[in-house]
Length: 226
Length: 226
Image (cartoon, rainbow over all chains, first blue to last red):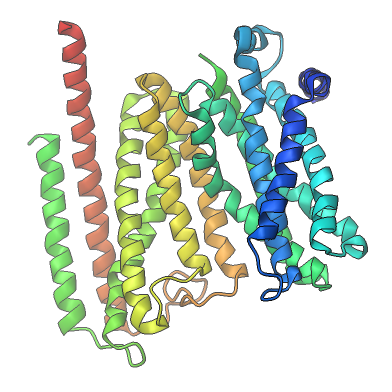
């Protein structure tokens, strides 16, 4: 277990160092998130529908698109100069390779969300300060689920043509159950309702995370081996 | 008898019993008091829905065994089951609105159950798209096994989201923890329908399996001569 974490951290650090040195992908993803929020602003009529009714959907659709856009990057990176082959012959277990990629993707998506959430609050004037803790918690729960499946699928598709197009098509049906749960919980939180009312949804989110992180850890090696 | 003919025979039996179900449902089963004739669609809709979910789970089970045994027969079965599942999902998605229009007053509503069946349909489409995108048979089998296993793991999440969501859809009346709550004659008709759909599933899968066997043989012969 310890070796798994150490090795995963090495893989994740490699990706993150690469990312923070070039910053192109991260910066594009952040700008993309801001733009999606701007587009949403023009896609609603504030005199007809109260912002608070739309807020959970706006937040989660933005996060879903941002996560999906960034997930392609994780393995695309390794296609240049056959870096993937290098990683595969490195003395790493497949599980730690997956966890490393998962960790790097989580950090990446978390940064995007950390910029997206304040922008969302600013643009749509939604007060979140009183529920910030639980809100961040539910964002974290849903993001782990999104990224766990997304990392596996991006590895699965990387050698195929049209991978950028195939990923959303395969991934979206998988993202909808956690998305529905996250939207429900967020709506309750923003509406000032107690968390106990959405315990079922939180359990669903937690079960989803556990199921798909474990499943992806086991299945990952069948996606990258030649 | 060849495999293809055996599949045809089973399908024929299934179609004959389906005709029997029509006769029994329309002429020999009491009409539901509130819904009237529209309720008859239940005998097609629910067995098709059960087989849509089961077919996806069987795709996943075949995937698990494939990853261990690397037997091409399992992959052929998974492909056949997925295609038949797609057809059954289409049956559910077309009979549902036909019932919904007179009873709910709308063809489609974003109800949890409808949405979940639509998701399952998209899951099947994604699976078939992935199969179409990989040319190498061995890689195709492995990749689709991974996606199939994930898809089967998603089915319970899709299924159980029903219990948390406020829904317009009738609650389960046969497959529920307590005893079935419908008259005996209706239950018998329904069981006949389930048997007919089971025969149809088997018949379709066997035919599709025989087809991919023939296709592989033709491909092999082509390679040998080319």
